[in-house]
Image 1 (cartoon, rainbow, N blue to C red):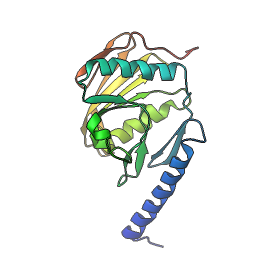
Image 2: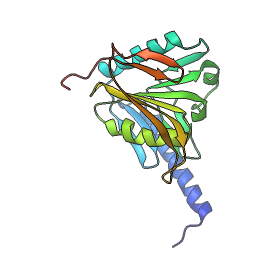
Image 3: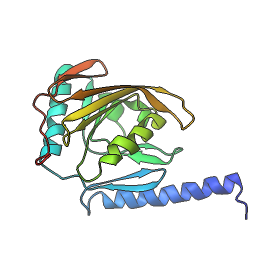
Image 4: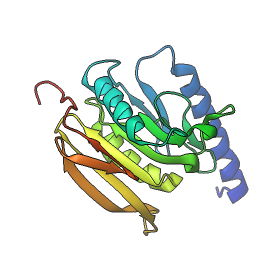
Length: 198
């Protein structure tokens, strides 16, 4: 049986809407974070406290000290969503203009200046593989990853086309203790914690 493109599109839209409804209903009753990729739903069992949260809090404080007042290092809801691509992600932190936060609903991915992730112990591939694929596809110009497992990270930028879809062309790796530049702002990583027993 052959499925016409319009039928496939409608079926994909219905499937995405069903996943979207499920994800939004699960944000409160279950721990962790639910996101939608082209492969389906991702459930990241991020710990609600400890080194992951402390890393996010310190990064936010460092960034907001050096950014202009009209920009925010935002953590939490809402999601970043691109309905035509059928992708909904929730970065640990989004660098975004405060004015873009007005209104209801998900943020458009092209309103972000940067997405920042703190790698979770439970699902590191979500940050190092899945989001490294999805964020350039969504048009997020800069992606910074901080990994408390290894005390390392990377800043990725310069989206360019490839046969596998848009990818970041530039990657700058760093180790904790070095200064890191995210867009135009340089911050310290010297006080970022590591996960225990790493």
